[in-house]
Length: 164
Image (cartoon, rainbow, N blue to C red; front, side, top):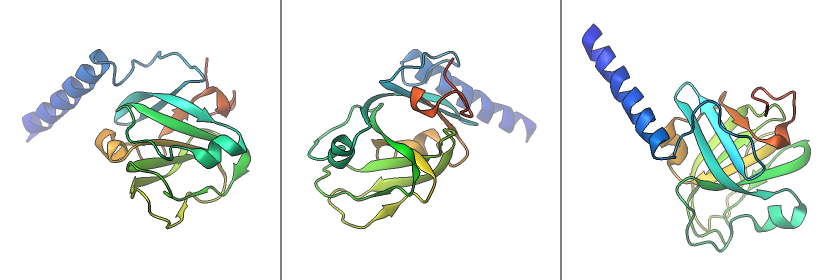
């Protein structure tokens, strides 16, 4: 039994190392930049090259009308203050995962595989400062869940994982 656990741990470490080498996950010292969001949890760390939606027009348009998104691409919606964040998928052509974070950058909720074109409200709850949209299914593949931390300059010096 003990050797099976070590085997599983070694496979997990090998996969994480391969992802780092392929540029899909970053080492712990990754750079903090406005066009990048890093996410970390017990599963490891991943970096996303993002577009920033930090005004009303950008947030309203979001990722609508796009036919694809790079595997580790995304959009970070940032609000002027924490609030209830609600989304829908009108005019959105690709499935998305939505990662809702508070002002401390801590993930509060993850909505997996939002359905393209669906008008059902996706509610991230109150106290959300930012929402990271990534390719549908990727949050589960990586293991991103509530309690993980996002790093981006929008979260400030008091974040759970602040920029250096």
